Length: 292
Image (tube, rainbow, N blue to C red):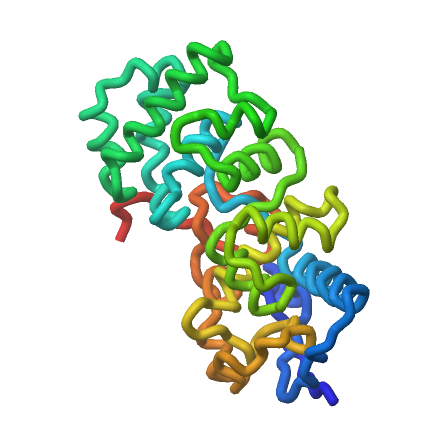
């Protein structure tokens, strides 16, 4: 038996009457997912989770600010070992000074290092972004290629970065296996693999290819907002009835609610320039670097 109590998520409109966002089900008890789940049942459960998350996060998007493929590529490389927020607070100064691959390829490394210092590992990241910019300028006429096999040849670019760029700058489906994605798909028992490439293959086989990019956003957003690494907010999770790991985190609804992050907890998001749909749903833009 699954017992749920509904509560609205979202902000009131200026008129005080209309609320945005899906009604979240507060779960007080959950029937465990069968341990001997068949392949067909797994596919159905996985796809239902994705449909549920699509309703919870209809505004899900890449949480890096960018205006073109080059900016997204550089920002994704910079996001390693730091938050998207920190990248978004750093890249305005970088792209204002070096707007094209040719400009960044010719940059003084010490000047780039100083700009990238807030991102951490700034020397290594400077080497990567200057190196990939040189490769773009010399081998691709200053344009970001739209093929996986070309992208992964660029300095600092692996499959994860390549799929972020392909899916969000070129509209070509791909699965982004970051730390959140890895954690959640194992919690949901979609796969027991730990290698990112094997996770990508296993999860990709559960869904139509056309859904891969949005699936990645849904899973990553849920991991950042509700299904945290150390203390998931199980009692505030809208997909708890479908989750084999329900109970690993806080199940008390009121305590779980206090664990929610970003727009789900009433806090600013990671983008300084988020899409309008996010703002319409009650999301708040992130503050610029150095803001109080």
